[in-house]
Amino acid sequence: MPSLLVLGAQWGDEGKGKIVDLLSGKAHLVVRFQGGANAGHTLVVKGVKTVLHQIPSGIMNPRCLNVIGNGCVVDPELLVAEILELRKRGVVINPKNLLIAGNAHMVSPLHKKLDRLEGGAIGTTGKGIGPCYTSKASRRGIRMEAILGRGLRKALAELSMAHHPGADDGGAVSAAEGAGFLRSCSFLKPFIGDAQSAVYEAVISGKRILLEGAQGTLLDIDHGTYPFVTSSSTTIGGAFTGTGVFLEFRKRIAVVKAFQTRVGNGPFPTELKTAIGNHLRTVGAEFGATTGRPRRCGWLDLSLLRKACIANGFNYIALTKLDCLTGIDPIKVAIDHDSRGRPVYRELRGWDSPIDKAASFQELPKTCRDYVGFIEKFTGVRAGLVSTGPDRDQTLIRETIW
Ligand code: IMP
Image 1: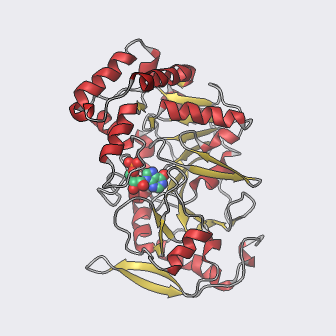
Image 2 (image 1 turned 90 degrees about the horizontal axis):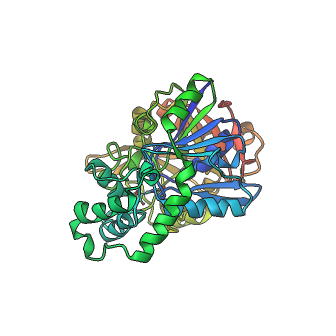
Image 3 (image 1 turned 90 degrees about the vertical axis):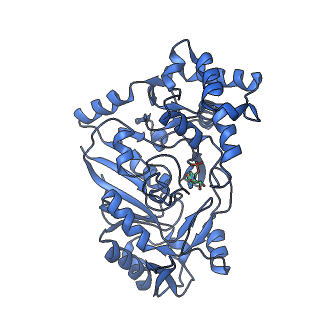
């Protein structure tokens, strides 16, 4: 059975939640392999919006096992809150359908405090992601399996004292915070296990496996716009190290927004600080799913997208939010950057009539189809899926995925 990989091809927020949700209906396993509560995957089912942060998007499919892999960093308090909130809405979550890798690292309250103190220049989400991966790389981190043993309290104290000596200055964790944190850890005990074996068993028994990336290629710690990046490997390599299993991905799906957005600081050559940028923010509801921050908006940067295709070997594009470009004419796309990093644009014709009710790709206006065709030609990757609105039904599938 095929394995699929779904990755963001830009700076995150490409609409991965919707794509993974569409695919997870047939998946036996959905796996998150990097990142943590910095992610916000928005699903809209029959008009009802759900934002998932740490839980894989397969949780809406009652037959699917959802795995939080070893490459992730887990915030116990936020994860418990997410589980309880979903349960309130009738979503079934138990250790049979949610598994947390014992060797995933734990985000402690201290990591979050440090992030809020230090993350300003990058514009991080403040979820403790960078400090937690720092602890991991410096071999002082705490893995989720520590919850199953007896030394968790001591490990947390040691982390605070040894790893971040400056933490006393505003970084210390109060007794009340510590107690709440430990309660959340206890709650998660039955969910912690051997995720590598679970994924491997699924591979050898021919199950359908879907790997769900968080953030996007341009936020990758190695291949992104460093240092304005997240602290994990958001590209294909992260899928292997973050699960500990070799998977032959039949489809490597790039989720690409029809324009470009970014939250947080860092370079954005095609950014539009104009009425068109504001228009895209409004029609696309471009506000962070995790932090609520307004997203910076701009023209699609095909030059950067081509690099993302090289990094990940994409063989399928899921193009999202095409409807947001309706009414803009001409539409620009960056095809290169000059020696000073400024975008070199190509102008393409726009379209006027709404496309959100189109039932097939052929029903789209010609100039709209040409826009998609230009992206395909430039990247050499077919746009097998085109999304024309937030709902599941607003999806034109030109090439089946599973
Ligand atoms: P961190 O991941 O919280 O350390 O933040 C590092 C950078 O990645 C900041 O620019 C964040 O805004 C950005 N970032 C982190 N997670 C996401 C996401 O899920 N979508 C978009 N940007 C993100």
